[in-house]
Length: 207
Image (cartoon, rainbow, N blue to C red):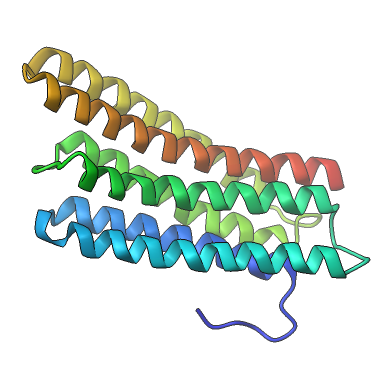
């Protein structure tokens, strides 16, 4: 990704969120055009992306160590950074899990949950772009509420998916594998909500 001159903390947070958006898009594409033979390639892309995310996190830590004045409290910057770090690793973890559990065919519920995760990431990017103007923003609250709504939607799909497993899947290994996959998808969406909550907390604390 192209770096800006005089990059500030908010710019780096947006860049971190962009990595999560790319991971969500990769997962969504994978779910909708599923090919077991391409899983290792997708997993390698996740590993490469994780290295980039770690580098961005390190840049923020180094800036915090070297700069006396920060736009918001150091603790708040770390909270936001870690929340984005967690989203990316959660989404990437789903792709790794598809490979580890040798998932051969994707279920409709998984596609629905993945689409919701991608929507959450898209909204979160808007949130972090808007965060730099948090004192004047008219949109932050509504955007955060959208993430909450999407997470609730994902939770409902998760319940339906698990119920479907218990009713229609007799193979114990398959049922266990899919439960773990659904749970990982739900946890990815939960991480999106935690990031939205972190923004809400930081904004309320700093206005």
